[in-house]
Image (cartoon, rainbow, N blue to C red; front, top):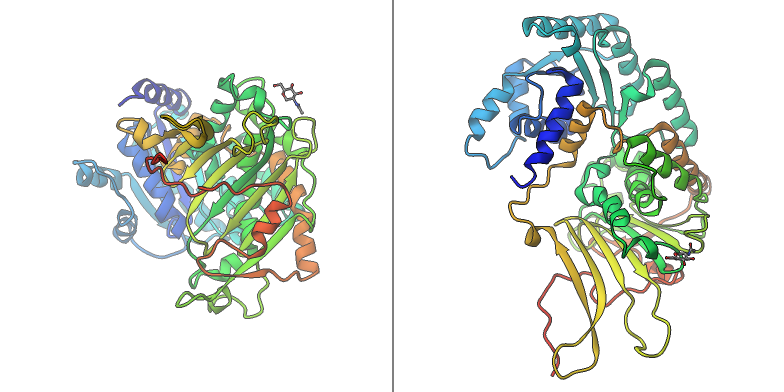
Length: 508
Ligand SMILES: *[C@@H]1O[C@H](CO)[C@@H](O)[C@H](O)[C@H]1NC(C)=O
């Protein structure tokens, strides 16, 4: 493996904190998130020997089932191309247990604690090895009762305790503050890891490296040179019968206030004084505090409608027939500081669109002067998914006799460039970070507050004024008004935005 020294370092980090022992307790273990994300990530960590020598995993949920049934559910999502896959799965299952219980009754938490204590004793764990990680794969409604039950009865008294929490972290500034208060009463901030899994993605982690380790980018990274920044998350599918949950939140709360804003803060923040997690999070909070609350004029909302045999959002039986919930939004954020004065950050996200992708597009200013007039702008793109890539659109003399310029790109497509490329799943690296005690890629409490402050006025305006989203056909690029909307902010749609790397043919 090319990065064997990196993996050795990570393993050492885990060992120095976990001292060779941990029990990971997955709350909500029978749910979708646990099955599809948490357990596959734990399996990957197990397979790659990242888990401490004495590790046990305990699933906990209300569903009554025995351990075999639980294993069956877990196995269906475990995949690898390892020739020893079946054996590894078997070994993994031998450390996976299941306990059924309620979320709101003391006796069940006592039972869970007893179960975990018995496992620790069976493994003859030393005091400092009795680390406990609570992974909350739970709906928000049961979140606080579970956290308090755990704190009271299952908290690791002898070694470290970590609590991993998933979104949603409230619905607006007020509910977020209430949730933060509830958690603060139970756990210390350094014990809490708020997952935003976009922060575990390779290209998100690369933003800081690219910005701050390249002399060619650092000086260009401001309003003098950059014209606009677009951060886009497109999904191909609609809610397809699962709109009940989504309808309560809408696209802005679902992916923009968290994932896209996190990417934006990495693009916009100032250089941190070190790569220490608090130094990084300090800068993220600082820049978020400079962002003005989004105005209604700077927003465009959409809702997908039927297109051929593809159903509209309101055709989803789990969605109220008169729902005004946005399944698409384009929002423009302004960072009110010297670096970013008048540079629009355009966040776009939507379901049931023409393609599935997440990317960050940094569009530079138009070239002044007349030596080369009308050449397209430079554009730097981070493609987060699918197919990690970074590329730079730049102008180049058309090779051969021609003296015209043509647009081409400096292309770092990971799978072409790196041999034996293995990019871990976001959840895998994030759980590894929890064991290492590294908070860099998790969201701090003040970051959340800063984030909600930007979005809450708009969200309340949309709800109070019952703003009607623009219809757009399933599978399209979004509402018709989108092109006009982004043009207002000076964004040019470059000729080949959905460029697929063909070799360019030279014109005669
Ligand atoms: C941007 O950076 C350049 C130096 O690279 C500097 O000359 C310019 O004043 C900066 N502009 C802003 C708005 O900070």
